Amino acid sequence: MERESVKRALRDVAREEPGFFAELLASLPPRELGRVFVRVLESEEVAAQVASLIAKRIAVPLDVATRQDLRRLERRTARLEREVGDVKSRVERLEREVQEVKNAMATKDDLKQFATKQDLGTAVEQLKRWAEERFATKEDIKRIEDKMATKEQIEALAISVEDSGREMVEYLLEQRGYRCAAERLRLDADYELDVYCNAGAVTAVGEAKVRAGRRDVEKTLERAQELLRRWPDKISGRLVPVLYSLVAEPSAVQRARELKVWLIESKREVVPLEEALG
Image (tube, rainbow, N blue to C red; front, side):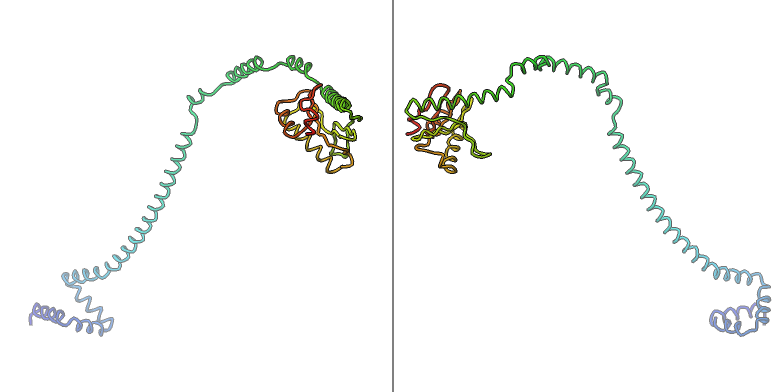
């Protein structure tokens, strides 16, 4: 049988029964298997086919390993891209903050608009001159103080008014037939009257003021009523609230008439005793 015919027959068997040759080769001892391969590989065509088959078998695991490496590389690249994005965002934020600081900072032109030390000094001197022209100097204040009444003078005036008030009340009551000695009445730390004159049939109690207003009239009546409530033994006959002043304002006159308060201004009765008694 020709050699080419045998090869074709083996090829047909290999195509139709591939498992046969696989079992055949697997059953051979290693030494015999090696001889078979040595013999087979003597043909250049067969050797090339075997080499191609072996290359395909080896290329598969190499290719798989390369894809895994590529996937790892892709994941690492994606992570790096995210980190780069974060860094870009931080850089952009810092650039915005720097720009805001630059916008807030004064430029040289801005600084020129502010006053210099010389400008401030000039302004201070102008202010001093303005104040001296419009406000009193020490000499002016001294002259005003010389003309003003001192505390002692005011106290002396008040005492003088109280004395005058007591004397006038005592005098006017005596002119009507009521004899009494007018005095200051002090019963406790909180209660004191400038004028107290008990004439038996009437008792005049009240205040003495340099200048009397509406509220002074009301306060005089309140003090008289308090005396009647707390110390009734100090009252004899008719109670007469009396207010003596050097100057009585119109509001004081009107209120005195309404409340029936004996109002005396300096040396005259603005609201007479008879009107206060009703």
